[in-house]
Image (cartoon, rainbow, N blue to C red; front, side, top):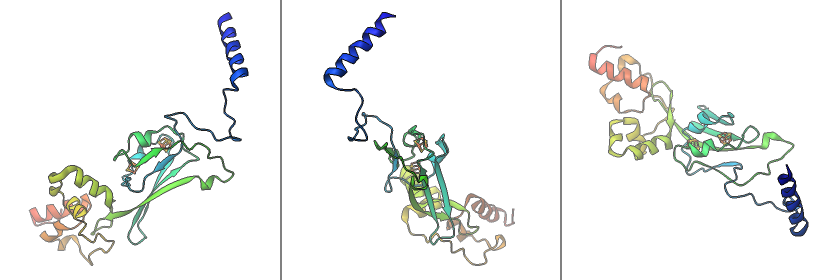
Length: 207
Ligand code: SF4
Ligand code: SF4
């Protein structure tokens, strides 16, 4: 029982001589210790808008908003700092390992929590036939690069890598399943529509 008292006394004497252990923030700037987990800051260049971080965020502080009405369609990845618990999971499990980094910024106090957010915006690739979301363009390009020659087996990835296709929103007019041609294989399609094209080409009948 005596030891803790002596230890406290020792620290009290040290503090008297050297000054208090605590910093004088907010009157003086505070420098957080190395490894401090502060505000997660997304990197527009490195983030590919895959959305993986939103799936692993325990506080549901990362929101994915897909805007199909814009031209071209956009995906927004939004970090809400008023919900964030600064656990670092988004940084640890980021697909590219560089899409978001926890900074040393900790002084986020405000009277208006609606200002506490950061976001990145990336172009979305959508199915040319049904308009379903295939993924963010940079995510597809990242996958193509990661897979290398193996990506040539996937038309969507090949197109994304070459950046040649106009992946639009501009759905080819009036195409119905009955009109599906072999050339339709070489369009950006969601898995469901590609399945229809493949089955139709193999059987000659609509599945
Ligand atoms: S630090 Fe944790 S709580 Fe905050 S956005 Fe990242 S995963 Fe979510
Ligand atoms: S690249 Fe990283 S930061 Fe960007 S959406 Fe994917 S997991 Fe989140």
